[in-house]
Length: 322
Image 1 (cartoon, rainbow, N blue to C red):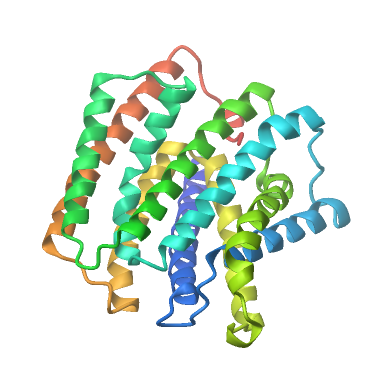
Image 2 (cartoon, rainbow, N blue to C red):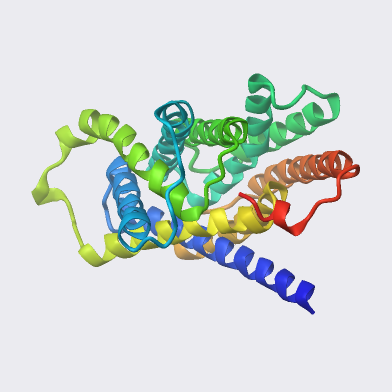
């Protein structure tokens, strides 16, 4: 009975993650799009998210003492937190900027490139080996994305470059998190992760904001609704918490599978919420090809994990670590 309860809780976390992730993406698109709320300042919006998340995490750690801060030296902070925060900020910045140029549906199709980017970054960083079977899957995913892009009616090269750059930044962040934090033996829970990473990401975002968005900002032209930005930041905070909770209870592969389900749901929802977001038959064919590659990639990674864990009996305590 205990196992079924744990399984039910895991599925509940996955459901919450899918709903929150989909909600934040649609909400961000609505806020940033000139056709709707018309706040075309993606760096500013991302800074609001990071500032709010960092502030909440600070109160939870330092004021209410919900969790204790991790013992961290300056060397650990400089070599682990700072590079991870830099790529986290970059992935959010480029990803949010893409909403100004391309549709939510096409963005989700481009996100099929995430396994390709993660695999390439892992090979470059030395955490994975260049294997023929994985490489062929990456080629299949890439071909599918190219076909999907060719079928995109409102294709925009600037938005596509922003999104792909954000994907590679996120992939590098994931690989660095695995390499740097595991090497230092550092474990961060959802609150302490935001406590250390969110403020640092805010600082990294300040530089491009000051150079790119601040000069063109005019208060008279900016719509500022406190409740919209507060609720938007709250959703982003809840999503960050849910991601860390899901990772703690499942695995990276499970999150990838949940991400695929989320992408299908978002592609369908976006065409309803944003009528201008049209999908062609070539879009669907290309995405289906890419998805086949993603599924095969996930299968091979699961197989690898099972082979490495065969000699060692895994325990609930080990699997619960972030």
